[in-house]
Length: 200
Image (cartoon, rainbow, N blue to C red; front, side):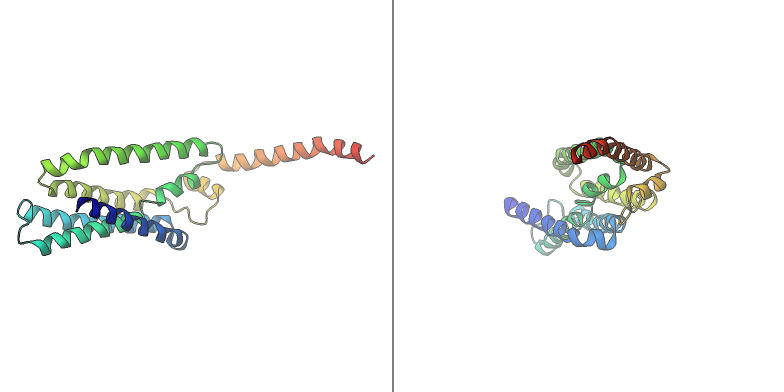
């Protein structure tokens, strides 16, 4: 049953990720993150209440257990449609081209490291907090992520790197564009005599 439910959870998350291919450019990154934070927070709160009430005494409470499982599936669906894919897209849109490679690399490292930590601490946390403590913990962090997204995350939909520079008060991308134009002019100037010599 654990293997079956684990497979269904992964499929549910995949369905959510597929929807983001359409919704990310239609609604924007920030609204998706806010939607994911709020809905996951609600799901975790409901699961925490049910687990807190019936932990260790699920016999005869199959309907409550089914509701908890459904909200777990919904949580994975909401994660897959928001916090699953969006943090993979935003780093390449925020960093200027001069540091984009390093920025995306560090973002990816952070993502995998945090996933590893969550996978490591979740099983003992569920066992040692009678289940509801773990879900309360994640509900709190989902709420905090909504707060952080609302006040600190810029919308990157339809914005150029120069626009993002203005958002962060930086001029790196603009300097990159100017330098690229200078290099292109230098290349055209140095290549012109060679082409003229060939035509003669």
